[in-house]
Length: 294
Image 1 (cartoon, helix red, strand yellow):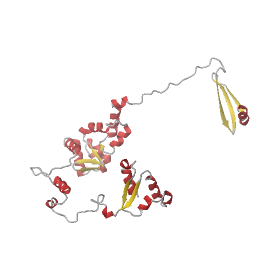
Image 2 (cartoon, one colour):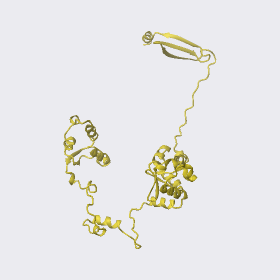
Image 3 (tube, one colour):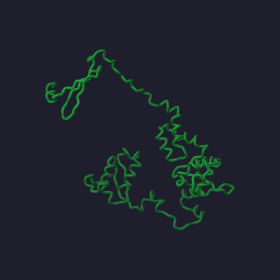
Image 4 (cartoon, helix red, strand yellow):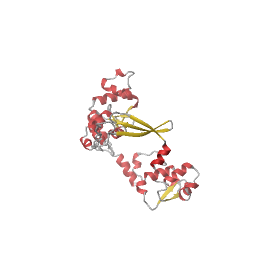
């Protein structure tokens, strides 16, 4: 049921509003729960909650054996048991399979294997890192291991001391957990890419914390957002309303203020002159007061 709920939510853009669609499952007991049982008839509370979230979709569930689910199980249940030579793979009966294998094994005239799926952004970072002395020095330190003391590091690398346990080298690039370390020459361009949507400081920071890193990135994001002329034009321009004050009275009891207050279960009326501040307090019989005013 959890898999069904996840799949329907994932495809909700395509399924919402359809008059009918088939929902194929490989778990036979789910079919009556999805098709015929009412919410009150589902005893398991978790199943009941998940079935309730599917109520806005119109579908009919049917069972199909797991071995017949060829599309979702093509990779997860078809491991290669017997290793074969690369040339034998090209003789596969499936033309699509042969085309994929041939593209992966293609080589140029010099005999160098061509990479069919090259990431231009990563190639750009590799080229920039090859000319960045700080990046190369940090990569060497990561490969050899950090020293025992922070002051044993070069001064430009001490900013990485606090995150040394999270740094690693992957295919020649330095990563900080799931984030990619950006060389100094590409940081300005990266900031502009992060701020392409012209979101605020907090959202731009959250976006950066998922993908890229360098020391002081939060401060650089703040400066980039604050210096964006387009963002400044769209800032809220409504000014605060001025505080309106009345003129002071010229004589006593020309202007007064009154209000009720409660203390010890009793109600009092306080009557104050605005010029002198003289108060006059009167005990109020609340029941009689309400009856008289009504």
